[in-house]
Length: 239
Image (tube, rainbow, N blue to C red):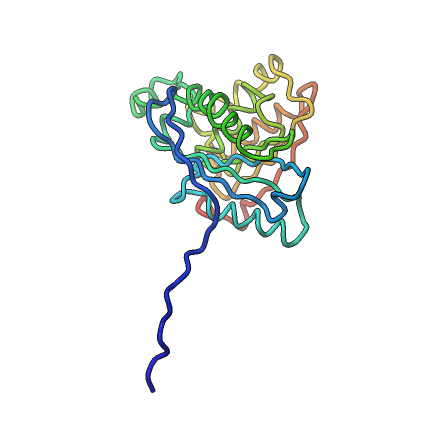
């Protein structure tokens, strides 16, 4: 029998994509936005989840899918998902290295301060001026982006309300950020902030960095609310 005829396909619309010409980074960056089903209802405003490594070929699509899952299941609030593109991740997501070994191997690293300033002064104002945003902001990242999330919590905690770090690369610079956590927490109050922290089966300096961070957070005054998920028995860095 003859195969059924194929009608013209209709594209599936997932969200909206913008390009921000960044004066800080010196180039254009892809900013992707997923809006929840209730968006547009009169008077409603929504918390915003900022996803680092959020280009269409990075983590935006599957995190937007989780936003849709939350809206369907009522397991968590409807929210706006914003994906922020990274390019040279080892440069944009790492604090400057102090260890000479890392300086030698990664001479282009250490640009996290500029990338954070880009998020703070260019991305967030763009989103808040164009969408119905509420007062709460969250940031999510995995691996090097998870390192950036932890670095932001420790150095500029008021930028977001909620921090989600999945297998953060706290091995960076011989665990310098985790080693500095106690001093940073003494200088920057993390009260009324929440951290979701998870790690897979990486072990070694990854696990040691997470363990050091947890001890520092547990001992800090004005404690951050920490939710820790040890996935070392079931997950790898890729999952």
